[in-house]
Length: 117
Image (cartoon, rainbow, N blue to C red):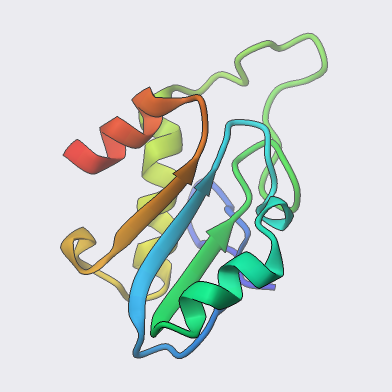
């Protein structure tokens, strides 16, 4: 099970050929990567994508922060946007311009931060 190296451990998985077009799937704030349906992901793989899925921090197999009474985990939207970049870095995709993103979220500000970084 791949996990990013560094201060924050983010669990991720990939689908498709490594030389495909990188496509980072970003789930909503409290969702795990298993929220993406395999058939949906396969549609992109069949069209040449290298699909990258990850668990947000505090959910799934990614690192947990805070406790049950801690409402914000002690991190920001910018931190969460950085998690996607950490996954890309771990995969050796050094330049974000190489990657596209697909988002399923009401949390547009995090995705906007990532897009503008």
